[in-house]
Length: 392
Image (cartoon, rainbow, N blue to C red; front, side, top):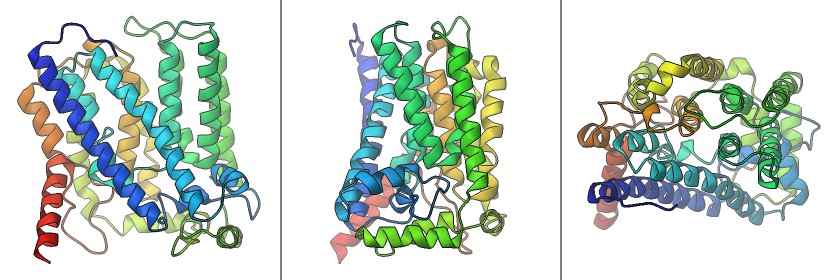
């Protein structure tokens, strides 16, 4: 990423941005590696292993590929870990490249390093390494498509990569299809802030929309059942999956009804009423941007598409992270004017980056205390843990 004549202030902002992103990345990667070494968990590994051992079922494509081509046993989890890292790396690179193009400005830093951007997975690792990262990479590939000269081998390679990732994402986790408004924006939007639309943009948009509808339809027709969950569990056990409960992820997802998920969400209110407040604060880099004023219809479509997730699962922070990242990728195609705001200065940006935090899930099991999240909260928790270890 060539940079020309950075001032001292530019370099200071660059150090802040890279420091925040690097800390979040290291914390999330170390946490995931430690969890994999212990045999995985119900969500960040077992959910990826859902397969077609009991017949076609929603969100089973990646797990089926891993079952057929994976090495089996503990090695399968490490292969999965490597694949997850391979998905995240280009997304982080895309964000850092954007910051570089924006000369590490405070508005760009607020957008890229805020609590619902990529650092979300560092401050609450339980919200990271989930199947939506396939969709994130598809969006980044589509954004990169508009930044490349058209009708070249590289251009059509990116088209193929985006299409493959979209099919894989939708058939491995059907809510990926809910990112379709961002896909269509990246393909079809045209204004003076954006590079030219790619050739055949409407045809590509129609293709992505049909895949999304087919994936959502398949999830309705083949939602799963306790019997299919049992067959998946048996295949995981036979494959030597080392997870203490290798069936947990399949049972929780494939064997659970929609009403079960909605009842679980309802049980956490009114404690979850704090989420609108922390969400609005975390969304400020988008809410205050000129980009939103120009593209509010696209943003509203993305928000409405994401809204059903809040009714069926308790991962409210994760749903906010998905919405923020998909809109952030759209914004990062645009010049500095798209995020220009008098609000973002050294004080306000550092307050947002350091103090604001959105937990993946709020108080549960009758609890009344919200998790301490955000950069500062994470550092405080780490220090407290270090003091505890030193005292034992």
